Amino acid sequence: MKNTSFSPADTDRIIEMAWEDRTPFDAIQAQFGLAEADVKQLMKRELKFKSYVLWRERVENCQTKHLKKRSSDIDRFKCNLQRTISNNKISKR
Image (cartoon, rainbow, N blue to C red; front, top):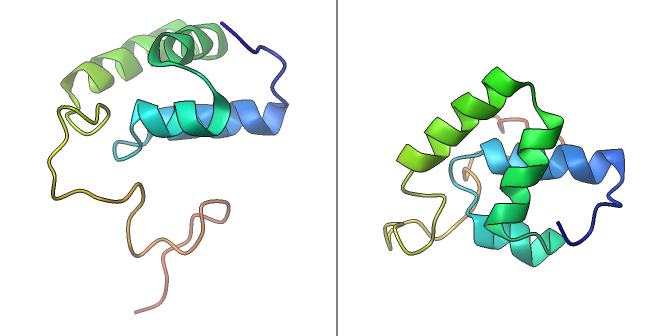
C-alpha cells in the first residue's frame, strides 16, 4: 500500500466509497491515490473478516465498480436525490 497515513475520517470515507455500488475504484484512486489492490488491502485490514468476505463477493458481482464493465448510461457516482456526500440525506420531494 502506497500511503498508509490516512486520517480516520479519510479511512472511513474510503471504506464508504468502496461499499457504494456506483463509486468505481477509479474514483477512489483519483481522490486518494489508492489502486484497486490497495483498497482491497485497506478493506481487509480495517473490516471484520466476515464483512470483508461479504464486500469481496459484492464487488466481484458488481458491474458498476469497474469502469470497463460499467454501462455507459451511468455517468455519476451518487444518486441524484442525494444532497451531499457528507450528510447523505435524501432531498425533499
